[in-house]
Amino acid sequence: MNIIELQDYKILLGEDIWTELAYLLEQRQYSRVLLLVDENTGRDCLPLFRANINLTAHVIEIPAGEQHKNIKTCQGIWQAMMDYETDRRSLLINLGGGVVGDMGGFCAATFKRGIDFIQFPTTLLAQVDASIGGKLGIDFNGIKNSVGLFSNPEAVFIYPPFLDTLPYRELRSGFAEIIKHALILDEKYWQTIQKADRLSPHGLTHLIQSSLHIKQHVVEEDPFEKNLRKVLNFGHTIGHAVESYALQTDTPLLHGEAIAVGMICEAWLSHKTFVLKQSELKAITDFILKIYGKPQLNPKSFEQLIALMRQDKKNEDAKINFTLLKSIGNAIVNQTCGADSILDSLAYYQGLEG
Ligand SMILES: NC(=O)c1ccc[n+]([C@@H]2O[C@H](COP(=O)([O-])OP(=O)(O)OC[C@H]3O[C@@H](n4cnc5c(N)ncnc54)[C@H](O)[C@@H]3O)[C@@H](O)[C@H]2O)c1
Ligand SMILES: [Zn+2]
Image 1 (cartoon, protein in one colour):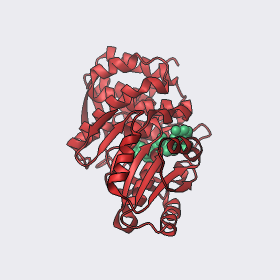
Image 2 (tube, rainbow, N blue to C red; image 1 turned 135 degrees about the horizontal axis):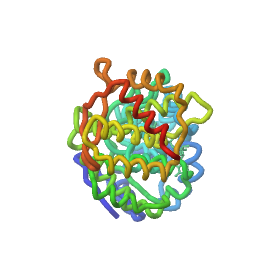
Image 3 (cartoon, rainbow, N blue to C red; image 1 turned 90 degrees about the horizontal axis):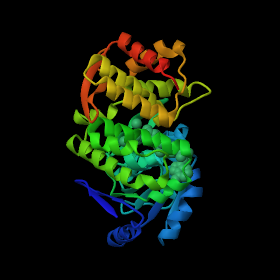
C-alpha cells in the first residue's frame, strides 16, 4: 500500500487499503455510517466494497451524471441524512466519481455545520484529481461548480480494481489529467507515461501514485488557488470552452477529451508566444492524437469558443488567462493571449491529420 500524507489527512492507495479503513472506523466509533453512490457505482462498485469490508451502513443512491450535480439532488441527500438520524458524529463515505465526491463532500461539509466524510473515488479522474485538494461543490443555474467550499475529507482511499468496470472512454478521459500533470511539472514522468501504449486499469497504479504526488505538492503549496495551483489549469482555458460548446451539440465530449484538445492548442500557444520548442510541441501533439484521435471542431464555433473563454471565471479584465509551458515539465501561470493567437491555435488543431 502507498500512503501519501497531507497536512490534514492521508491518501491510501492499493489493493490492501481495507485494513486501514477498518482501523479508522474502529478508532473513530462513528454513531452512523452513510454511503453515497450513484446508480452505476451502486451496481458496479458497492458489491466489491461490501465484499472487502463488513460494515453497517445506510446507502443513499442518486442518479448518475453531471446533470444531477445540483441543489435538488443535495436536498434528497440531506433528507436521507435526516431520515437516518445522522448526527455530528456520523460519517459519510462517497463511493463514486467526481460528481459523487464533490456533491457528497458538499452535503457532508454543510450538514449540521459539517460531518466527517471519506472519499472513495472510483473513476480515474476522481482518483488523480477530484478527490484531493478539498474543493467541494455543485453546479448552479447551469454554471459548473459555482456553489461550494473548501473542506478536507478524513481520508481518501484509492482502490484501483474499481477501475475494472469503468467504461474505456471514462478511463481515457481521466488519463488527460495524468498527461497534464506530467506536462506541467515533471519531464521524467512525461517519458514514463509515453510508454503506456494501451491504457489498462492494471498498468495505472504507479501512474496514479505519481499524479497524486504532483497534485499533493501543488495543493499543499497553494491550498486556496492563489497562484501555483493555477498550473493545474493548463489545457483548461480552451478545453473548458470546447467542453461547454460540445455539450450543446449531439456529439458531447467528456471532460478529458476536451482537455486533450485544449492541451494541444495551448501547447501551440506556448510555442508561438513563448519558448516551447517545436520538437516538444510535436511530441505533445502526436501523443495526444494517438490516444484521443481527433474530435472535429466546427470552424463556425471558433468565435463562440472565444466568447466562452472570456466568460471563464479565471479572467480578470477582458484578457484571456492561460497557464502555458516553457518546456515540458515546466509551466508558467498568468499568461494572457489575444483572440487572434487563440484562433490561430484552433486553426493549428484543425489542420492536424487525425
Ligand atoms: N473537486 C475537484 O478538485 C475536481 C477536480 C476535477 C473534476 N471535478 C469534478 O468531477 C466531476 C467529474 O468526475 P468524473 O469524471 O469522475 O464523473 P462522474 O462522477 O460523473 O463519473 C463518470 C461516470 O462513470 C460512472 N462510474 C464511476 N465509477 C465507476 C466505476 N468504477 N465503474 C463503472 N462506472 C463508474 C459514473 O456513474 C458516471 O456515469 C465533475 O463534476 C467535475 O466538476 C472536481
Ligand atoms: Zn480537468
